Length: 116
Length: 114
View 1 (cartoon, rainbow over the protein chains, first blue to last red):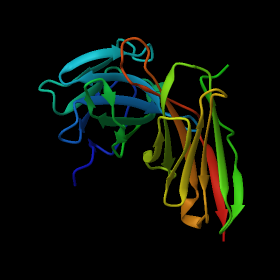
View 2: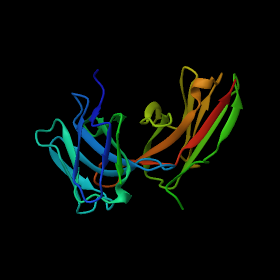
View 3: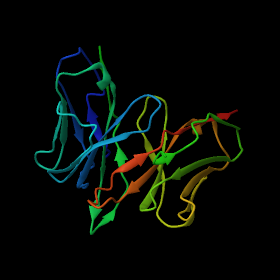
């Protein structure tokens, strides 16, 4: 399978615990994005990486959230001290950007987080 | 004004009919436009993208873009029950930093009745 992969697919955690999600993008893609989607809403942008550099973070990404892409390949999204409001589907997408031309974003299957 | 607006639906069409999904956007600087299909409990799947004014056809799908009216639409011909899903319109705002993030509408729920 050469698509975007995410792990775990589901995560149930208790309020106050830390969780970490992983995303493996399509291998030749240099851009990696994280989005969050709640019921009845479209995905909302959280942050993105160009290779290993994190270039923008949404105001939705509070101090409890951190994302890394250490070698420009896979990325992790960590949520510390989870709250019930963090319950959502966390989506990773990747794309290729070359010579200022933007190619389409492809999404992974998502990680569904439930905070109890 | 919301950045990307879609009718939430549900839009119900009989099998074999044409389904028409509409989307408007507020930022005139928007450059790229995408339609994603999302089945319940699944992630968005890219089905069409369009960059230039006019029509773009791919199989049973046609995307239409009118930048002057800030309007993009998706037509699905010969609708099948398997097309029943939420259709998300997404817009790329190349906002200074060239981050190419997508801004999504809330989606339109399409139901195709056998």
